[in-house]
Length: 296
Ligand SMILES: [Zn+2]
Image 1 (cartoon, rainbow, N blue to C red):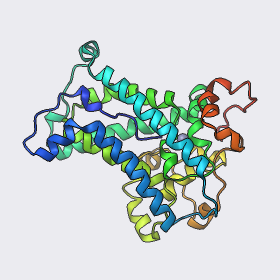
Image 2 (image 1 turned 135 degrees about the horizontal axis):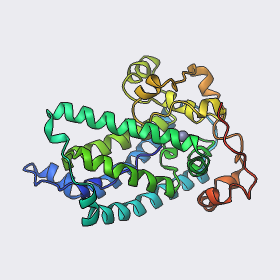
Image 3 (image 1 turned 180 degrees about the vertical axis):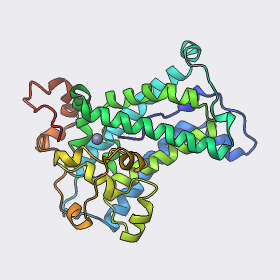
């Protein structure tokens, strides 16, 4: 799953004026901040992947980078427009009144509730994308990448990104967190998916400690294995807790994951990763003779 779930979502929550000019700027210019953070962060992780690579391929995957940057840009700008329209929709506001759950608790408790609820919904949505044939044809775009790195985090079909945005809107309406909290949470989610898709080798101790709180690159790489039993595990986007609770966590030793075959068992040709073919993939699934779901 990706992080472009709710750019400018706080358009739906009236932003209070803030006294600190830096924080006020963050709220006013949230789309620009998110844009710079997403693509700047991706560039930074691309540099770190060259310095501390987990898997070394020896070739520079230019076509893969171009495809993923293209899809990331398309999603960002279309979703920006979509959330702006929805956020300003008076009709939608009347359907989903801000219940303000957030304001009823101490901020620390409220943030914990927001993280738990959001990541719980994201976990089950991700499982649904793997469970139902139509959704899988859309989500498969994310899994066709045979070279998984930080740019894979934003290789998502526009329809999946739109479904995610639409599904998360009512959740955020009900939670009713202040704009500033949402901005920081969005930035944290972007950082988390850039990190957990990255081809970076973390020291084993750090990986183990971090892995208790967030999804690490090693944990998420298993989800991108071409073996379907692995693909259908480790669904967590930001936190690994729900995989542990619902029995979908799968650990693979570091050495094994370094040599693991990535992508899917099919759609492995160069042309399968052309942007036009990825965008058409859900519609052409049957015509291209692709297999149905395997539920191991
Ligand atoms: Zn997936």
